[in-house]
Length: 618
Ligand code: ADP
Ligand code: MG
Image (tube, rainbow, N blue to C red; front, top):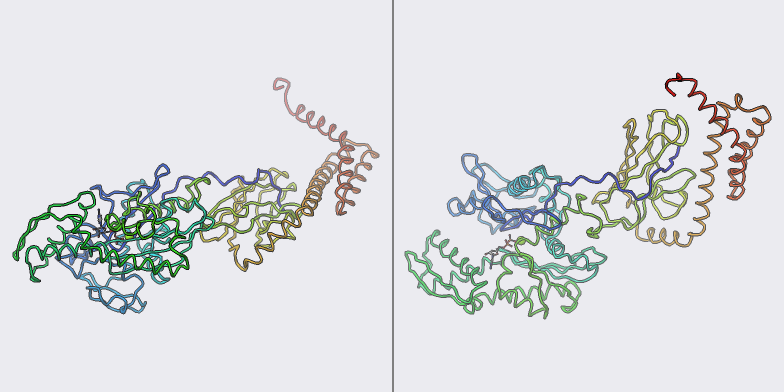
């Protein structure tokens, strides 16, 4: 038995409850978590108001695990059990991580394990520790469990590295809505997707790594055209260059102790950051090998780091070439990573492109902020006007209704994920089952669409036709998986099915289906009208036959009864003619002829009610 629609099309399912979703930048040096608050993405701070969490995990002999700033401070003390830059090991084998200072062991899964006092640890477990700390921070802030997270990964990450990142989230007990590329997240943070088309270069200079990507934006969807970089170049190298400068000034040779070296590095980092807003900065340090106090000017610092910055520009040139574009085709340049605060970096990149570069969003946070926006959208919090066009369903998804007609539930080009619901009811008195037929396409008749799935909702309690309320929900998740569910609201019985609408659907088929929907538009309109009139006529037949059976003999004389019975039979006969007008005429005649009968039934009904009650009650 098919369905009748009783609610307006296009109504959304229950207004969503606000869900808790966050974006996480799982960085090599630092990690962050951000959330959408009153339509703005905000990075979440720890109790000491620091938003960055150093991506450092220390395993202690007593079983304790320390993550973040404290672990970073203890790195010198216990280098083999304090794991930094673990991101470099994700999804990697022994061959790939030879240069790292840990004791590795190969594992059968192909990913290295790191020997610690707490036994062998996989990079997945270590990353999970960082994610756990960020998740806890977020849960405290949003006041509840997280429904989902978006985690960013470098654009060049391969499948193994992405899978390892997903596994880390699983170990941390998090539900990953999606992994997105770091450069894409940065572009989203700047809202660039709203420009619909363009070419974007993302320049990401972090602590120890440099990445540059060229993105193509088309219809709001980002695609990575090319990537490149240097896994051994970052802001830490600026610090090292300054340390060399200090050593020269103080006539220090190579004989510094590790803690003295750390002391010089810390001072170098302070001076570097201060030169972001001052022309010259006073540096001072003392070691057993020598001391120095003096001003470092911006010019001197720039001279020290110039070769490093020039190196990044050479990489940009190569990556642009790989993208098949020329430099003047790049519309926007997004600056990402703490080291892009360095003045010379901004100047040189802007000079190269002969354009202003985007720096207004905090470069440490921009990736996490974009991820938070994306998470909010994927979990279904964003309202439709702030939707980012990411994935759309190429063809409408609908349901078969009475008369072989299609009722569209999700229109084509709707951004996914999406959930839409419509209410239907039963057609016959006592109907206990309903067939749900899921179809795809733009045409009005089921026979012209692609059939995706069928299922039945059984066990509807017998009720009068039209009394049952069956809510059918179409939900498409971020991966394009469609779940159709049907729930009868009085009894609560439900049934559902899951399908992948894109399965077996190539681009040519989609184009053909769209063309057909245009060229058959008029025919479809006629077919729809015919089918709708048929459904209406069937309902009239159904209702009058039932009434005749029940009260016909009591309320009509023999002639009246036979006349009405005959008209019903005549309507049944024309019902399957391809002629809408004839069906309508017969139906109109039947409703007209049955007027008197309906009147008598109403009067009899009122009388029945009246006789059932005492005089006082009236
Ligand atoms: P990653 O992506 O590798 O985790 P980040 O984006 O957090 O790294 O960048 C960390 C680097 O940014 C460090 O080398 C740090 O010294 C540098 N940095 C942070 N603030 C500034 C600043 N104001 N000026 C210059 N460099 C900075
Ligand atoms: Mg980063």
